[in-house]
Image 1 (tube, chains in turn purple, cyan):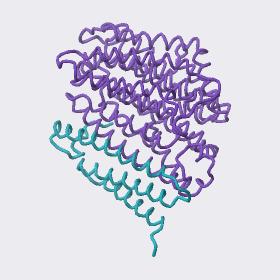
Image 2 (image 1 turned 90 degrees about the horizontal axis):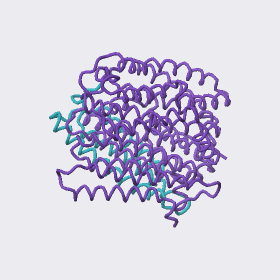
Image 3 (image 1 turned 120 degrees about the horizontal axis):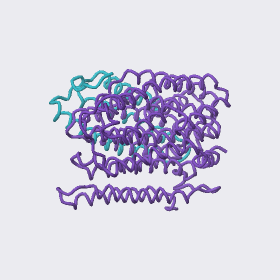
Image 4 (image 1 turned 30 degrees about the vertical axis):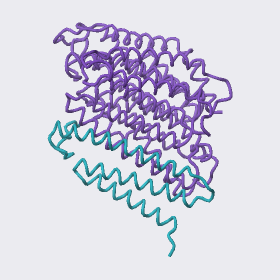
Length: 472
Length: 103
């Protein structure tokens, strides 16, 4: 058995357990910031070490096809690591307010292991375990603010709806297992037995369960409530990590296990993506709470990413990966600012942000850049990402989908700019202090967003490489 | 009459539907958690049955079943903790009374 293949997961698991132990040893009055810094250093090291794991050929399996370590998985692992490192960095201040901040860091790391396992899942068993590890950690994280009733409410809502989606997915997996006699993606691909009614029902249930996790529109009802009630850094991680992980495993299921139905399934997926873009963007317009607005906008972003999957070409997959990465960058900026505002102005309504340009000019600037990137305005990376997505899908013949995407991006700019207007027009209620870690993370996200917008080729080469070795 | 695979499938489908129905009708959080358990156990029956009637000797279905039982236990543990918090905050476990976020 080649344990080298799962070294990122092992490292994160050991780190999480060590954090729990350290949390117990530290005296109760002492701050847990040091645990956060330790986690950031080690995860950062892992992030860099994964750059050396990209390979031309000979992707390795672990434990009899259960776990696949290819370039695609490595890219997504890096994406999750980046998201978690930056989330921990901007939640250092926020975690001080939580009563069990040591456990908060450990929980985030458990969720990270789940995401990383999902990225390389090559068997429904691995996928199920990764999915549950991720979502159960998120149930606990969503209810982590003991002083806030909304947090408990969002936790229980997420738990109920999430468990139902798990049950539906599992039922689908069991039906598929009955037809294909295996849980292995590559075996299911080669079994034509799965085209019986039971097998197709199983596939539909699995896809529905994945749609729940990706918050695609008919299955999105949990997202706004959970996003609003959960602690702000957790909301950010939900939007970046949980969604990207679900999309990563969805793509792998679609193009390995369900490869032979993709031709029939892509038009359906295109319709879902169109509904997602339209519904998410229109519902976002009339929200009062910015976290809720970002929840609906993240539904729309899921729609954009599905546009890339619809293309069903290496270019399409590449554009999804590219978009997922810059979506992480944009979200880090937006949620870092929101967590500061939430901490110091006690709320994330539009009025809490009024006059942010005077009380904290850097934060207002970064928020504006992040929102413009989500909306897809040229100098930012969001524009490049959407360009790749829509070019890929037009080449595959879905011109109408790209058209809807263009129109909806324009509409989305309206509600993103509404936030910018509030920040730059109103007058501040109180002054805001910005700590060094927040300043660092917002500057990283803003600079990276603009750099990848002007010089996308570095990220583009990487995603191209991962996508072309994935679909060959 | 011999009990074949179809019987097991019908049993599990029924259990799943009962769970889903209870989930939609029940207002008590504990009942909802039990209904979710019912749905997950329906899946376990499915896995065991499919594995038993497999043409070749293979245990992947049973392995999956054990994993699903374990995960369901973890899920319920988190769920009970959250219900405890809900009761602490709202002094009720009725799901209609805790639904404050809408829109």
